Amino acid sequence: MAYNIIYQDVNIVCTNMTSGVPQQIGCEPQPRFEIMQEGASPMLTCRDCKISSSFICKLPQSMSTGLLSFLAGVVIAAAVLAIVIGTGGVAAAAVGAFMLGAASTTAATSMLIGAAVVAGTTVFAASLTYGYQSKHDCDVVLGMSWSIYHQAILVQGQHAIIDQSILECPRGGLITLIMDKGIAQEAASMISTSNKEQIWEEVKSQFFQGLIGGLTAGANPISLTISCSCYMINWWGKKSHHAEIYQDLDYEESSAVDTAGKVIDAGYGLYETGKGDLAAQQALKKAQANAVAQNTGAERLSKEAELSRTKASTKHANIQKGVAEKANAAVKKAKVSRWTQLARGLGQVGLGLAGGYFSGKVADYYNKKETDMEVDILNKLRQEIRKDRETTGKVISYEI
Image 1 (cartoon, helix red, strand yellow):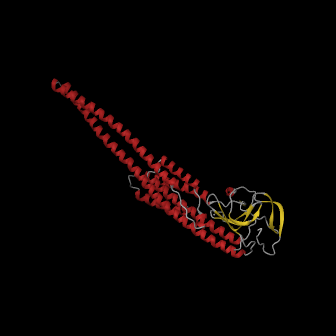
Image 2: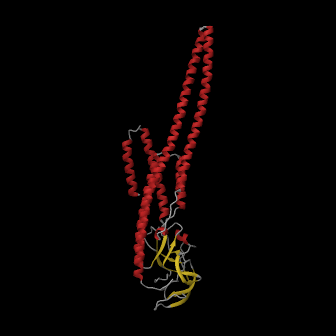
């Protein structure tokens, strides 16, 4: 099979890009002394990973807008609950309309030595300084290595890359080479448009998850802290799986952080419920001890009144009897209060778990949409690369 050797300034696109324009691949500023085409830039190797400028990765944008959307959902849900509780449910219908309107608004706003050199190519040696100097976010790939390279052509001890070489960014973006500038621009526009649409899908997903969380007891500071922390941890470890999709490999998304967050949140809810129940038990014990003392006093004064039969002793006994009755009522109230608080606390935990379950379903739905969009754009990228190879036609080496 025929392959093209790659020289500096060849166009590249990334499946995580949003910039809308292709960049070029080269090396960091350095002297180069190697076999080149006449009038061309240096031949690139598997260690040359300097990108001319930033692709403007979709992942940081998705993280920041997603987090803001999540918090907006929580705030709206908290406002809805405050209105419903404050009006005794009278505003429920208006709230429903408000929620639908907010959701639709968010939805709207919301990456040879045995080589045969073709006749007509002049080969010579040069020693000049080449490379890109500007520093940017995509320098994260520096120090990495291109996969798929020429086994026989070595430049400064490194294998030369070919038109089928691919470079995987640590954030999961797949960087591919496209030699024709027009096709590269077409691919860059197509990928960027798709990635911007995926960002808005993430915005909608996080908004609805925030809305559900806020409506199911997730608007308290502790739950918010846990949710936001899990979101940041998830983002920090998040990467696209474009290389696996491109090469038809299996992969798994880990939900360990989200699951741990739900467990911690539920554990905190149980802790608060237990702490409240302990306080209620102590209050009940005090009420029971007081009732026992008051009832004992009432019995003693009642017996004394029967023996003395004076108005004063009878009055005193009646007063103590009233105090004892109040103490008994306090015991009943403490019992009811304890079980009511316990039921309320467990209910909130259950509501929180239910909210977590439905939030997970929302996340699964939008994650699948985003994955389907990624698969679609990678299939289209394959077609663009195939068209590029058919268009380029100029072959430098026939064998790997």
